[in-house]
Amino acid sequence: MRSRIPVILLACGSFNPTTNMHMRLFELARDHLHHTGQLALETSDWIRVDPWESEQDTWTETVKVLRHHYKEALRAFQSKKEFMRNKHPTESSPEDSLSCQQPVLPELKLLCGADFLQTFKTPNLWKEEDIKEIVEKFGLVCISRAGSDPSQLIQESELLSEFQHNIFLVREWIQNEISSSQIRSALCRGLSVKYLTPDSVIAYIAQHNVYTAQSERSNEGRLLQPLRLQSTAGNP
Image 1: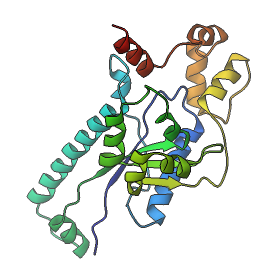
Image 2 (image 1 turned 180 degrees about the vertical axis):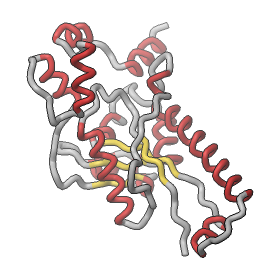
Image 3 (image 1 turned 45 degrees about the horizontal axis):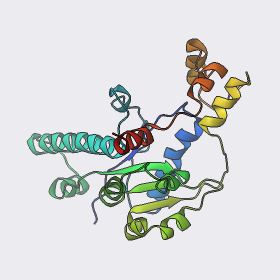
């Protein structure tokens, strides 16, 4: 009997703002990995927010976020292994015995939409070594999105093709193209975004008066942080 593989699905980034589709990514990925029999995932109360990335002083590269959370996962795994070794159960099932005999390290996968793969082609946005570490060491669970062809993007990239066995493509049969940029645009126009993002997010936006026409204008034309860093490095 093969030991089940504990898996952590990590979605990182700005979530600017969070949408219902961000949450939908997790449900689709869990269903896909569970039904294909490749991996085992928890089935209830399994999505949580970790503040580590947002607590950093500056923008943090995706690969560094993955490294941090994988290190935390290994620490939790070791603690659990120590607990299992030291406890003295009165009853145990054959499955429990197998689990104790053959502990399985957790895996961490970067969860993303198919358009995320397109960003790998943006000049100066990613370091080649970071992409390689992400797809080789961690892997991707990529959810389909209208207008993106992840299979083609993989075939067009020598690096992604090499590690395509570690890229799981998930089909979203119910097309819903909600995006953070569309929600920001609607808010700037004073339009309702109810049922597009959680009510708690709507309340926070209203309370703090964010995503106004003025704030959007102030950010217009600003380069993404990695592009600004590359520009600075190239022009000392």
